[in-house]
Image 1: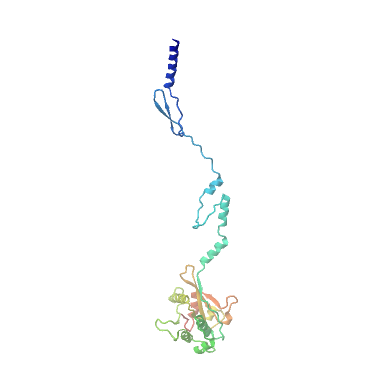
Image 2 (image 1 turned 90 degrees about the vertical axis):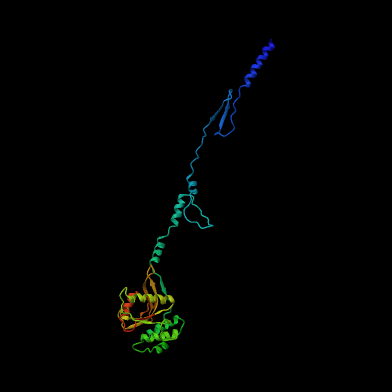
Length: 296
């Protein structure tokens, strides 16, 4: 009887342990479900909340380093970023152009293009040799050497008048091109008489056009003007060599004419015989002359 009782106790204990399952915690991530099986074989899914810790604030210095700097960097080059706002401010300050550079740039922008032929000044060897001296320089600029006295002889220059322009240009063409006067489209210098020196006149327009063409092609011009209108207190008609021009800032018009004066009495200590006039001033001094006014 005692054995039967002991057997029943053992059987009861075995039955209790066989129908109950101790739940096990899953080894998955916190966001996965935990499965629990009850004694009635019912499956229950329980979701847990995922907890996200915020990142600590980034130090300002580090954030500044990570910013993308604006500006161009040459291919293959390296760019060093400043490590602080103070360094950035310093860099910006150091790259600003100075006031003097700005003024110089502005001055250059407002100044027109100047073109001067590289011609050496030769003073006239006699007081009435302005034409021989001018033609001498014109020939020399093209590699032809003829003395002033030889040119004066060929031109028929005489004291006290000097030289007629038709003779000066005849000798110039003969020595430079091999004939006294060009015909048709032949190369050579041609004399022109100015009749209208008013701003905007056809004479002014043609003069500017011819000056620019000749100087650009490397040929100086021959000018004759009334001395009294250029050099107050003097009188007579005078010949000089045109050596250049200056354009307006936009490059569309001639604003100034340059010439070399061979007269010994009008030499400047700094610029020598180099003189500058507006086209209107020069033609106004030409129109009152008895001789033809310029050759181009």
